Amino acid sequence: MKKTILVTLILGLIAIGTWAQNVEITYSVHMQEVGWSGYLSNGAIAGTTGQARSIEAIKVRLITEIPGSVRYDVHAWGAGWLGWQYDNDISGTTGQNRRIEAIRIQLIGEIAKKYTVRYRVHMKDVGWSGWVANGEDAGTTGQNRPIEALQVILDLIQ
Image 1: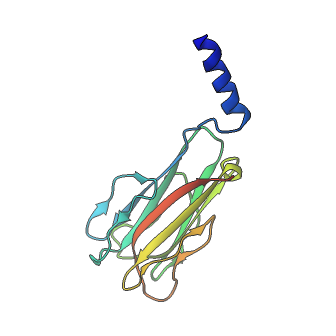
Image 2: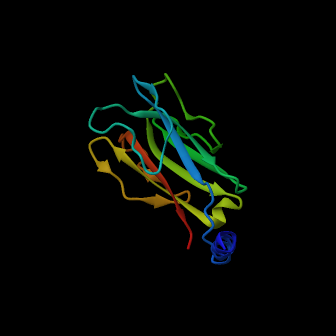
């Protein structure tokens, strides 16, 4: 009887597409005068607000069995957009005082058909930006407004 109920429950979850998959996006930031943060996820704030500590570099990674990758690019003060980095590579600089002014993050591959990546940044003297998604720019370019904090989340596409 218990086995029948369990099998029925499992088949029902698969049939309606709610079978839980372990999917997580984690991120770490390199802060001016502090160094690398630990990895955070689920919208946790990486960096600081109101402490005048700019983010100089980021690393982003996916933890999932769904095929695909995460790519990200940063706009660094005095250098512009640095080019796409993938799956936990460093985007930005460390020890060069090139603070990040804008970020874009995008999922690619099969994972992008099932999830949306959303993110926002906290800018010096401005505060939190609105949420953007799937490769859109968060932050500013050429306005000398360094990013001090970052939040990233994954949303299941319904």
